[in-house]
Image 1: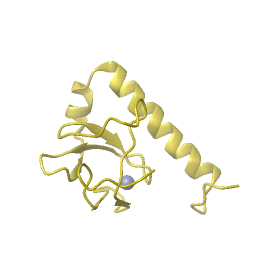
Image 2 (image 1 turned 90 degrees about the horizontal axis):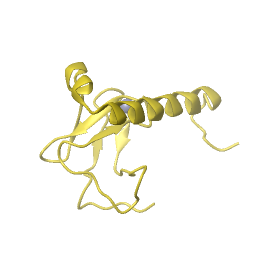
Image 3 (image 1 turned 135 degrees about the horizontal axis):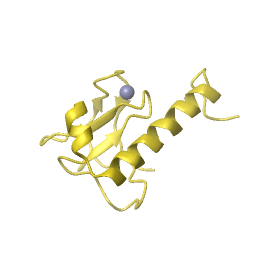
Length: 96
Ligand SMILES: [Zn+2]
C-alpha cells in the first residue's frame, strides 16, 4: 500500500491517538475517502468520519445509528476483526 497525500492527511485517531496516514477501502482499493465517509481505526476499532479538511473525528452514537444498516454491519465486522487481531497479537505484532 502506498500513501497518497491527496486524500489522507497525517492525523491521529481521536480515540486512541494512533497515527493515521493512509486509508484502505475494503471494497475497492481505487476508491479514496471523501468528507463524510466513515472508517474504523485499526488501533482501537473506533468508528471515525472524515471532516471537510480530511482530518478525522469520532462518529457520535446518533450519527452511527443514522448510517444505512449495511454500513453499520460492515463497520461492526471491521471493528470485530480489529479487536480479534489485537486479542490474537497482544504485543502489537500482526505477524506470526
Ligand atoms: Zn484509534
